Length: 255
Image 1 (cartoon, rainbow, N blue to C red):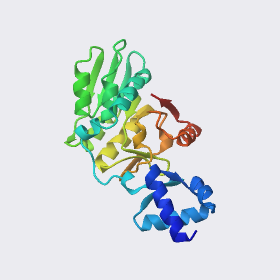
Image 2: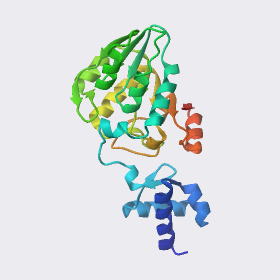
Image 3: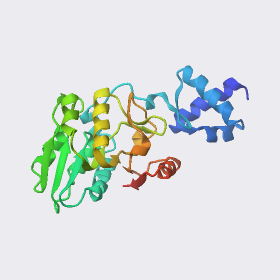
Image 4: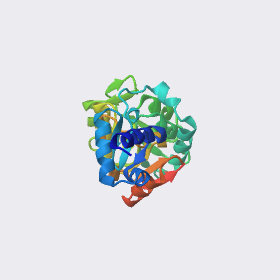
């Protein structure tokens, strides 16, 4: 097989499968891993795919536009409900503090807060704040600031400053993308800065992300993978990626 034929076949495999590893492609085409890496570099320069740690993903896995709350709510709704339900066991004990990030999956966790314990809840999300406001055993603190209409999240200096001085037991964090190379990522730098501040303020970080986020990379990286203590996701996660997360000390929970 000529190099051009192999490169075309590799591009087709990546788009058909949604992701392909260097190791698998080297075995399939009976070439070295270094040859595959050169092919992937050529295909990325040609705009055919995007290289990620250990392989490649289709170019449209790297989103150039940000979806709003309505659009994201309709994506993988069953998985988000299960993830939100599974998150309940990570809510701190009576009198503990919980930080809930903006996002449609984190909102599902907020809707399922246990009612058998008193919880101090911090959030920068208008939908989360609305859902928690009338919770009988939750004390709500809203981290105010500039509201981004597309995510209904408060961001900016005022929001970040509102976190200063707090040490919060657990943070429920959402993400738009998750890869080993780029870590956790989101399209907006201000939102990324807020998420970074949330992670820095928490003793334990619980990432709530359905498997469609895995392999995606957005503009702003806001945390490395090893800053996460627990990932709650669904059965669509790649077993190899799950094993690598576990090796980094991340507890992977399948909801």
